[in-house]
Image (cartoon, rainbow, N blue to C red; front, side, top):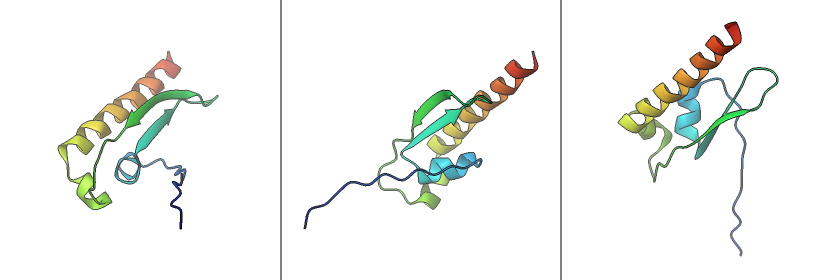
Length: 77
């Protein structure tokens, strides 16, 4: 039997959920939604719960959170 790679798209507003469940995170801008940033998570064999506990996850969370906050500031000005 041939093995086939599969792709799934998860849409979430929960940054840590995206980090723990994804290989790649695409951050969208406010309307009209355009791609603001793409982040590769680069985890190996960690489970989602193990990923959440890593420093790498915390740093990525902070980076994405800052991008979102900057987007809000740009819209206000």
